[in-house]
Amino acid sequence: QVHLVESGGGSVQSGGSLRLSCAASGYRYSSYCMGWFRQAPGKEREGVAAIDSDGTRSYADSVKDRFTISQDYAKNTLYLQMTSLKPEDTAMYYCASRSGSWCHPPKRYEYNYWGQGTQVTVSS
Image (tube, rainbow, N blue to C red; front, side):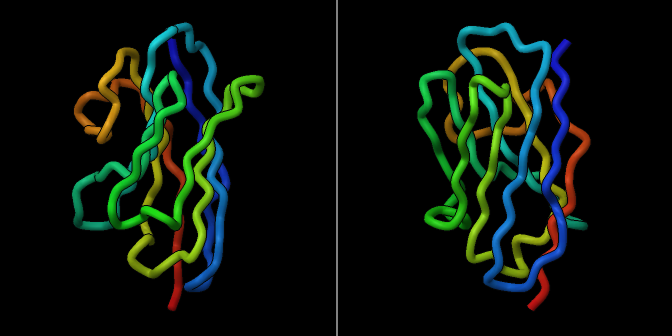
């Protein structure tokens, strides 16, 4: 059973930075996808960034050049470094994972393991 726990959310002003972490346990797949998703009130959950077991990364156009997804294999932790934050980045952010390939772009209906979410609020 895969278990994902996010942390690192908070409130920042526009232009600020945050780093989200996702601690993963129970993972045993050689090929996998890990992604960050977000959901703002009244909106659908959308893919923000993804990384696969080969280290290939992808980003939504709205966060490209501002967000960076990475993983620490030794710590079994996924990260999302967010810079130049905007009010429209305000949302609940979720870490997700699945086995397999064809990770890009991340599609929420393909992921079967989810964390509980961490709130990011950006004020203008």
